[in-house]
View 1 (cartoon, helix red, strand yellow):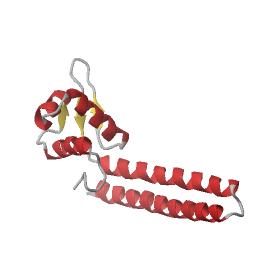
View 2 (view 1 turned 135 degrees about the vertical axis):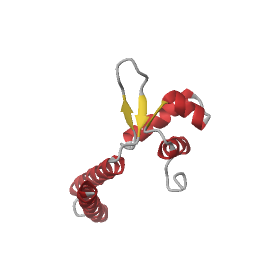
View 3 (view 1 turned 30 degrees about the vertical axis):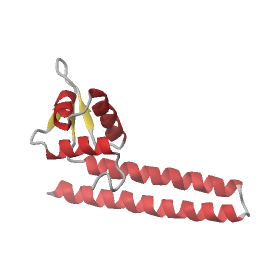
View 4 (view 1 turned 90 degrees about the vertical axis):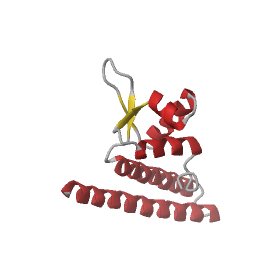
Length: 136
């Protein structure tokens, strides 16, 4: 499902491993063993998942780095996507201003409106969920 909805194969495998583990945190060595891939593959997958704010690196003195999927990972990831929508909206509107009066400007303005609307909805939805989750 993860790959079919756009997550690259290796990050999907690492994420699925973290999601289904009984342990809260796994080391890179644990992930290499469980996923049966090279350390470099795990490293790249972790970097990708960190960028999406789905996985967090946990470092403690005298201990290997471990990786975890926090309870608020989905919230953080959704907030990140809302910020991405805001960036798309801003860029589209800047393009519309540069091309004022042209058909391209109208398309870019519509694109900006769309991403502004979707970004606000995502952010609002994430905040509503956070309040509901915090009340549990």
